Length: 238
Image (cartoon, rainbow, N blue to C red; front, side, top):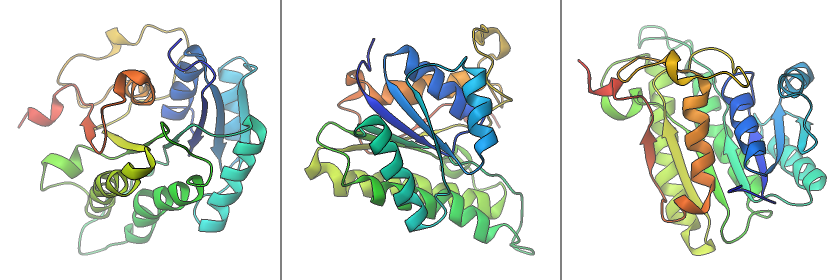
């Protein structure tokens, strides 16, 4: 198991990417604290994963600096430390310059919350720790798409580079992945590969969770400050 005895915090968990990532982390031997604003989401994920022993539930709201600190403290207390952090907070709203109705929410979800979580995590992380953020291929390769969402995800991608640079001297890696679209909820013990083919616009959560897990392993210890497109090549199509 590649993450045996590692303690991982996932912030912004859902029944999709968050549940899939937690499941694969547990299979790799990690202890996992999952955090979400709603207790029901956490208990639903716990039930979906058959209530594993090394899964810990941390209810909290990371939309403020103080809220993020409470989540980090609670997770560190229950796992007796934190080695790895992934910020999985989602949210998609389509808007254009004529409206900008999504600007505040997309800025919060994709720019501010990751910074709040990373800032709060620093006293608990150590040399060899890693942080993973979620951007989007819309932010990396196209000049089209929903305005506020795309700008938010551009911010996430740039945060990966800036944080990796600033935390390099501490020995903490920062990376990201860039999906195009994550399709549906996680289905444990289901063979997901047949549900997508190269070039598809979307894929099941498993396809992305496996890359997040890999970024936390020693196999990726020389990967730092990059956002990996995980889209089956869909970005290459017209």
